[in-house]
Image (cartoon, one colour):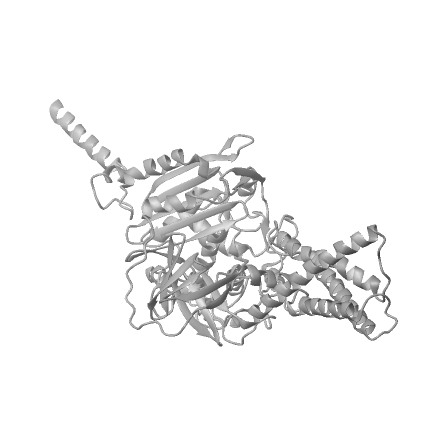
Length: 623
C-alpha cells in the first residue's frame, strides 16, 4: 500500500512539475517555440545579455523585453541612468517613448472605428470645429487615413513643439491651432512623416469621445492592460510615480568619436503630446506590445479589428508594397511583414516590433540614440530584407531632378536654409539614378525602384503631381522637385555672396579709417550701416538653426517676432541704402565717390532687400 501511495505521489509530483514548467523549457526541443529569427525562446536571455556585455561602449543605459502571446520571455535593464551618481537602470526606470506614442493614437482611432463612431475615409473637417484650418494650400478632402498614412500634405512645424516650463501648457486644440504648418503637397499624394498631423488625430479622438486624449488613453488602453507605470500627458502629471522616476534619469548623447557626454535631465515637455509624450517603464511597454500578439487582442472587442489595422492603408506607388498600416510601420523581412514603430525624442530613443504569426513582440528603450534600438529587434526578428519584386510594366519618364525634403520648413525664416541644405539632386546614370554618388536608385519599373545608401536598402516610389516629380523613400521620407525652391536657392547663394563682399568692403573701410584715408560722399552713413548689418544678416540664419533645434524644437512667439523684427530692420536699411545710392548716381555733388560705386551699391542693397522678402525670411502670415 505504501508503494502505491509513493508511486501515486511521484506521478502527481511529475504532473505538477511538468505543468509548472515555463514554456521556455520546451523551446530548445520544440521548433514551434522560436522567435522569427530562429532563436529558441530559451536562448533569448543569453543573446540579449551577451550583446549588452560585449557592447557597453554603445549605450549608457537601455532596457529590453521580449514577449510571446502568453508570457514574458525576457526583461532586463543595463547600464546607468545617472553615470555621475552611479545609478543603475532597473525595472523602475522610466524612458520616454518618443514617436511610439503615436501608436496610442492609432489604436484609439481604430477603437472608435470599431464602434462605428468614425469613418476613416470621411473628411476630418466633419469632426473639427468650423474654420479650424488657416493655412491649407489645397481644398482637397483630408481623411483620417491621410493622417494615419502621414500623407495629409503637411510640412513640419515652425513654432515651438515643446517647453521646459511644465506650467506653460495650453489645451491640445490651442496648441494645434498655434503651431499649424503649411501644406506642401495635395492630401494623398505622398507620405512624409508629420508630428502635427498625428497630434491632430489625437484631438479628433477627443472631439468624438468627449474625453481629453490623455483620459481616453488611460480609460481604454492603459487601465485595461494594467499599465500602471505609464504617463501620457506632457509633464507626466497624470502619473505621479512616473513623474518622480523620470527625474532620476540623466541623459547622455554620443558624439562622432563614439564618446558619451552627459546632457542633463532634458525634461522638455511636448505641447502636441499625442505625437510623442508617453513615458514609462519597459515592463509597461512590453504589456502594450504583447497585447498586439494575444488572441484575442485585448485592445479591441472584435477580432477583425486588429486584422483591419494590419492591412496596408497606403502602398508605394502601384506596387502593393505597404508604406503604412493604419499608422503602424511595416518592416519587410523577405516575404514576411512585421509591424511596429520606432521613436526618438530629446534624450531617448525606442523601438517596438511584433509578428502576429509567431506571436512574438520585442521592445527596447534607451538613453540617447544608438545601436541597441536596432540590434535587439534584429536578435529577435533577424535583419530586414527586401522581398523579390517583379514589375508589371517598365518605368516610363525621366525622374532626374533636384528634390527637396517635404518634411522641411518650407515657410518662415528657415525656408531658404532648408532649401540649400536639404537638396537631393538625382541625376540619371544609364538606367539608374544617383545622388552625388552617395545614394542610388535602381528603377524596377511600375513607378518603383530600389533605394540604397551606405548599405541601407529600401523601396522607393516615383510619381508626379501638379507638374512636380515626387519621390517616396520607404514611405517615411518624401521629396519633391520645385522650380520655386530652386529659384530661391539661386537667390540665396547670390545673397550670401553679396553679404560676404560687404564684409570685405567693411574690412577695407576699417583699414582706411585707421590710415585716415576716408573719403566723404553722399549717403556714406547709410552705406556704412548697411555694410555693418551684413555680418548680422549672415549670422541670423545660424542663430535660427541653433534656436530652432534647441530644447523647444521650434521658435517661441517672442523669438519668432524678435527675429522677424530684426529682419525687417535689416531689409529697410538695405532698401533705404539702395534708394540713397540711386539718387546719388544723378547728383553732381555726390562727392569723391563715382557713379559706378553708387550703381554697385544700388544693385547690391536693392537685391539684398528683395532677397529677404522673396526668400520669405520675413513672414508673419502663414506661419
